[in-house]
Image (spheres, rainbow, N blue to C red):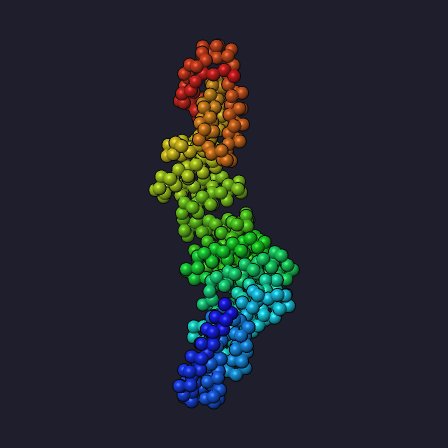
Length: 443
């Protein structure tokens, strides 16, 4: 196999020599290859040999041709450095010791420095492009040099400016956040400042990278509620109706589980600027967590008034029912639960809420009528358990409530005195279950 490769290289070299012998290298188009026709011919042949050696994966020979070209005509062609990077990346992968690998990594980065020196003014593959690629190589081959990685990416972003690849910004910022979490080299103020500085670099089509960028910030630990308020307060005072800025602030402060006055103020402002069922659901949860059930219900009802999709309407009714139940507004919870049940009879949550409403109001009725209402509560909760997924958060409390309801049934004696036989039909006359038909059972 080696002999075959040697023959191929030799043949290519022979062809190159034959062709060059027929060319006149004295023209101005060859000036970049050397000062004399002879030097130009030699260097052009060397460039051809570099290409052939790379194609044949003979990286030792390629490295020799590369060195000669850099010494003789470093500004002749950017392909010298494109192939130089190929040479040293392959040598890195084949290195037999850490010292050898480090030397080849240094040489690889040197290729980018030389390329930038001689071809940084290229209209498409100039300094910004070169430093971007160098930063990525730095991260790949020197992953433990955290300060060096940050520096390389900052240089790339500075060169790219507003045209910097969004992926490059995200990779840099994600690593910066990791360094904040894992080292003492990065302070929280730097994370905040870089987030603020880099956010404008994301254009309209950078959705995926912008999401990753925001997620890195949110998970960094530097995005505390105090820091976020500091970051957004002045901006929002200057642009209180900026929809994108409000969305960004609300999303980040929500991820940080903020619950201060500033957070709730901007969340309500965001809903005012861009009302939607999704935002209403989010606000309802936020105000529910705060214990402000009136506002939670307000936003859900506002969303319900404009929602036309029955699926989304059912979800809103469920949330209203749950909020009203937690707020102990039993009639409102029962009404919303019935509406949700009617829109989707196969959802177990409305039955869960209704059963709880029946149980609460049954306990308030008193006497035999109140005891009898627990039959309806039991039936409804049994239906909820039947429909709820096995991993639902409501399964455990539903089973506990079912047992509790059964323990509140009337005794056989109490039914006898009320002239009721086991198995007979009975219509509840008390509480939120009034009018519901059920079956007589003994405790």
